[in-house]
Image (cartoon, rainbow, N blue to C red):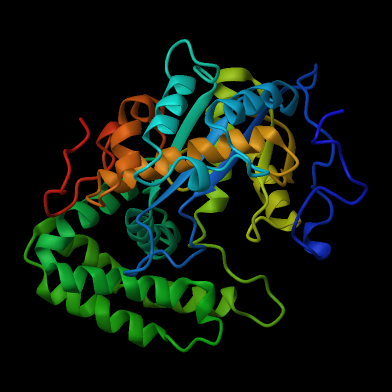
Length: 387
């Protein structure tokens, strides 16, 4: 008998009616209704995407594998590293300076000849770039759309976001640029449900940034942003209206699930997605993701192709699904590599670099087109840069 045999009320660790419908209780096994893919994250902070205690990246690790195929792999890993804990987790078994040999074993799983080679993908979100992209998406794009201008399909929105992100720190100074990001998060996130941060507060920072900018590309983007006071006011009125659903505009986990679905559907056709349970992923949010995918909507600035096919979209607990434990290892490895090469000393990132970098997907939400570069910090990182 498998140690993962189901219990009567298992399926999620999240209580309440919001997490009742999309729980995967049974072991997954690939059949004629599509391949199973599992996904887990590392570095999630909800919609609080900027601050000294916040991680710079969100790493979404995904593996095309069912529980039936994952169980013997997990047990083999546990025996190889002599793990006694009930779950296989990156943070507990592979992070830290003393786990180099365990990381070597993990690299072997991901590299050619390993059990997970060809089955694994890492989707990275640079949270600071995500905030800048949202400035364009929520306000500038909305304003120009009312004028009949399409800056999404033409690539202009992406160009604006990249210009502001890459040139902003020099054009404004690091302190003011960081204040612009922080004020965006304070204004647009769920914590502002009482609207303590007003449009006037937000635009005071925008106006200061525009006045200080001395780079043309940045100045032009900020000039457009200054003209979006009406759109920003409408946003807080609609987002926080009584009885409404709190805004998820700055929640990166939701578009990440969409993109992971696209990544694997393009490779495999119809896929069933099992995601580790997170409080942001309510049944209602899953419904929205499913509708968006099936209506061929778009996650952020990345457009879903016409060939994306989603079967089941479910949540589960890693303690009950060995496939999710493998996704945890991959998400942790991706996060370690990203943080390390953004300048945060991290022996796990150094050790796993060669195995993880080839797995970083081209659709990752980064401010450049070379996923292997991961980060281009204003100051040179303490460690060598990827690439």
